[in-house]
Image (cartoon, rainbow, N blue to C red; front, side, top):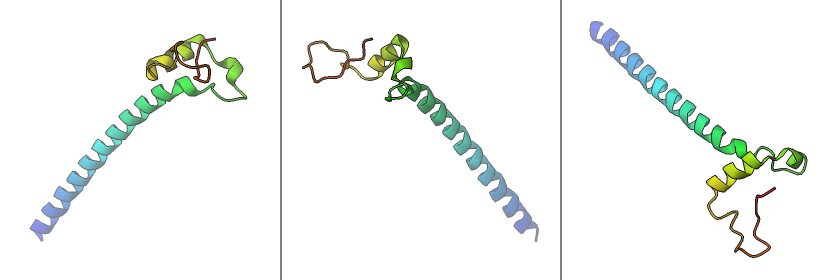
Length: 80
């Protein structure tokens, strides 16, 4: 009976440790994703009027070459 209790305690502790680790990793990933995607929040027909130069600068940092003026006219630029 004692071994059974120790086993249960061990696996309970192990499971909680794994869950804590996964929770921490998820939160870290979510924060990175959220901070990266915030630059895209005003790129829609309804909110484009709120698109700022700061957001344009952040997007050009995320997507290298997007503001390259040597690209053809069909290439999207993010300068206001």
